[in-house]
Amino acid sequence: MSSSATTSRFGTMSAQKRINVLWRLAVAIIAIVFALFPIVYIFSTSINPVNSISVTAIIPEGANLDNYRAILSNQRHPFPLWVWNSIKVSGITSILVVFLTAFAAYSFSRFRFRLRQPLLRSILLAQVFPNVLAMTALFLILRSVGRYYPMFGLNSHGGLILIYLGGAMGFNTWLMKGFFDTVPRELDESAQIDGASQWQTYWQIIFPLVRPILVVIFILTFIGTYGDYLLARVMLQDTQQFTVAVGLALFIGEQFSQRWGEFAAGALIAALPTLVLFYLVQDQLQSGLTSGSVKG
Image (cartoon, rainbow, N blue to C red):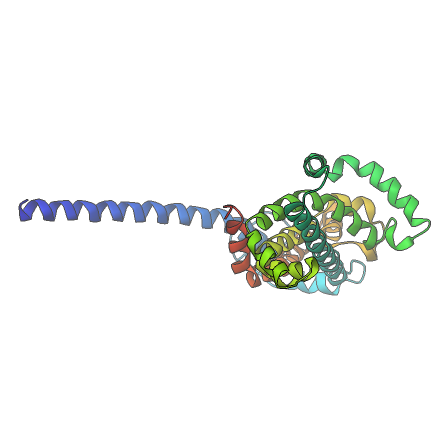
């Protein structure tokens, strides 16, 4: 092969590589713009002195932080309390979902018992129907429970947490069971030969190995419950008990008093907890989403 042909071939390969890099870069830029546009739009609305959702520039004329000050100091609508309520409800729900689904998934993965497969299918079938379809029944149940246990009745965070638990258990049990199946059973057998009980095997051997999927389920449950509006709006009736999603709706739901600037400022502040949480666990989140996809 002549030197000119070799040079031409390498030149062609370099051109192809440059084309691949360019189109990948173009796709990445489009994705970034698509993802950042709503955030930039809401930020522009939050610093706009005119109480309007229509903005013509990223930094509007006369931009200031008055909307942030107003929403944080509003006595009628306690926005900081709403954020705390959402963090509390979502945090407790996520922790309980992680531990309960971990126990259930371990049982389905490691033990063989009668009705095991029918139970797994029943859990998945029940998950097909969302909580929204049972909203009327859930409302009546919480009202009845509240007569005897007010902390789990209507207008209580305990009752809302119970509803969220019921909605999150099914799918997460299946997701975690798939991850448990990737952990070799030889580890269980080795621990039992060394004299470990089932409980010790679970906590000291298996549980640390499935930490990535625990983080995945925690973050997904937290985000899902943190941003829920419909169920929280129906079950919570007192302003002091509102979550942030329900509370923010008051700024744009009152007649002749639609405060879009404060709403936008509150939306950005409310997004900070999930943003910080995602940043802290992003490594575990990535490994948890990929490791359980291949059975080892």
